Each structure stands twice: as C-alpha cells, then as structure tokens.
Figure (cartoon, rainbow, N blue to C red):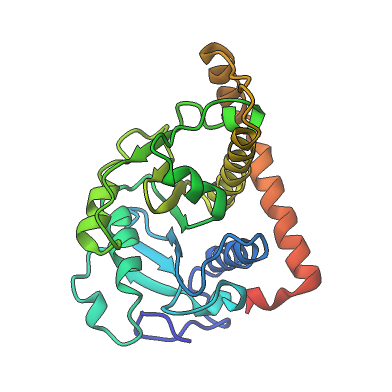
Length: 255
C-alpha cells in the first residue's frame, strides 16, 4: 500500500519510520487482545509540531496485517483528503481529522469498540467507579459522551473533538459507541487503552455478581490516579515489551 503523500513510503528514505513502527505495533497488539472490530476502528499519530499531519491506518485493512509502510500520512487541514486516491475511511477522517485539527495535545488517538468498554458505554450510567487499582487509575481522568448522533463522519468527529478541553482527561467513554483514548505517545495511549479495557471488565464482572461494590473514597482514588500518572517508566516499559514480543514472533509489522 502507499501513503497519501505524493511518494511511496521507503525504507531507504524513512518517512517517520519509528512512529510508523510504534503505530503498527499498536494495531497488531489490539488484534491479539481482541480489541479490533472487523476492518473498522482506527488509530492515528500526529507527526508534525502542530499535530495537523498524522499517520492513520488505510481503508479496510485488518489490524492483524498492518505494517509500518501501510500507514497513510494525512493533513488534517486538507479539505480534499477524501477525494484523493487511497483516501482513508470517511469515519476515520471525520473523527481523527477533527481531533488532530482541534486538539494539538492529542498526539496519538486510539478508537475501538472493545467489548467491556463498549458494554460500559451502553449503560444508562457509564461512569466507572473506583473499585480497584485499575478503575481508580481513571478517576477524574475521563469524559462521557452522552450525545451519540451516528457514525463518526465529520460533524460527529468535530463534536467529539470539542469534548477534549481538559488535558487531564484523555479517555472518552463514547455512549452507545465505544472508547476513544488520546496520549502524548503511542506507548502512553496504548497502555491507557489496555488498562481501561481491563478496568471496564473488572467493573462489569463485579456488577454481574449482584453484590455491593467496595467503592474507594474520592481521596484514595484521587491519590491512586495521581500515583499512576507520575509512575512514568511503566507505559514505555509495557510497550517496549510488546514490541520485543512481536520482534521475536512476527517482525513483519516493521516492514
């Protein structure tokens, strides 16, 4: 596959090569963890200082097969993007183009319909109470979108992007839809995605028991969230190990 730029991506003339490797790794692991959905859902990564130029998966490509060289390079300020050969999916452009146009702090954006996050997003009350360490990680760190209006074409993407006004809140529980995670790097965003799905699973299964939940106080939950935020080596260590596993088992993601 070719990028959306005028020349194909080349290993001999790297075009954001390290960023491509990281994003390709995220796709491969999302599939391994069953957080993909057919050939839908999209991950993106800003590669320019202003955040407007970004990498994203090509249209109708399965996460399991995505390689570094497959990723499209787009400009969020290019109004003719969908008219060009090899254009991205219109909903990918609508959501991720809007994010990278409006939210410079959203360097990496991961959108999936993972099972437990989507179950949470389907509840009348989609809040995630701090009942264990993983759920407490997200205390006061997410927003809930209660105004789903259909597929994420540009108007819906613009509406969602406007909700990321608080830099501390980098997770959006998309009511009736799924989950949207943003971060400074692929490692940070993927680590957050992984732990949100784990947290949602714990909460949903705890509710299945029908027993009262052991909810932490706001004070303790707030402290846990702060501690996790400042435990800086963890996300990079986690993602480094994920890349190392792929390097051993299937390094084709780097191609």
